[in-house]
Image (tube, rainbow, N blue to C red; front, side):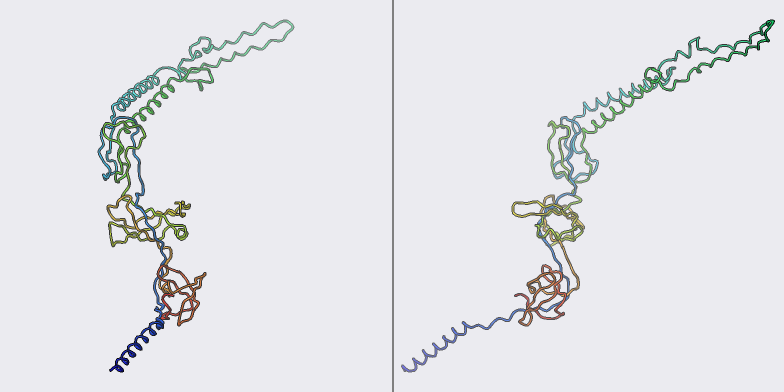
Length: 382
């Protein structure tokens, strides 16, 4: 019986030893392979951006005054020409009335100046009325003299030429200044009319400036005052944004920025529209970067291809810009290609390294230009 027990113990010990020995020398795992196939290769750069309106307007009153009404608040959607706010226009309206009266008086004075029987210099030239300048009658021929005894007969004198006639009444001298005349009353009156017209136009502009109207359709972002408050001329009172033409503003690190270009396509995702992807296009890449303290970043603006409704100003957006793409090319997963230099790289096939030609190296796949045929198996990752 003791012998049987000893045999059992020995058998159990041998089994345990075999288990320990087997665990210490595992068989090598077979590397996962993948076949070369045909498809698209794309390269993207990604970041997070912010939605902002394509244009924002700061609106103000043209004159200082007391706010009389505010017809909108932050968040209100407005249409072009809609009245947004007004200030007391009593003084501005009185200034317009005064300017109109001044213009009327100037126009009456111009009419009187035009109808007055004066020359263009404002006086009747003395040459038109002086007796000394009236035409003289022609002299009669003098009688022939009695011939002297030893002289020949003198010829008869010819008639004296008539003096030139004075200018006809009503003909104006060519230039008053050249003749030392006084200023033209018609010209002076016309100048007063011109000045009054300018003053009236300015007064009407100031009256119009007592009301703020919406120049574009959009959403009010801020209101800087309330009824009864004093506001200065030109001080921003309302901020209006064109929310119907929203853009995405994003920053990319310099490692990605050198691949960005205008007209590249992008995919945009929004937190409040889960599962939806919106197309966009790059419309601007800043030529100069900014340093945020850790790296240099470049600003990029993107425009929605078809913007969704009710976008919020300032909301965040995920942005992926396609910087390179190739369709219907031989490809393998990018994890299968190593030692990429220029247009070549290395893959692992049948346990040996193989140099292959490499084209576009995308985020998921890398284009193979030579060295492998479609269907060839390579190690997926090594």
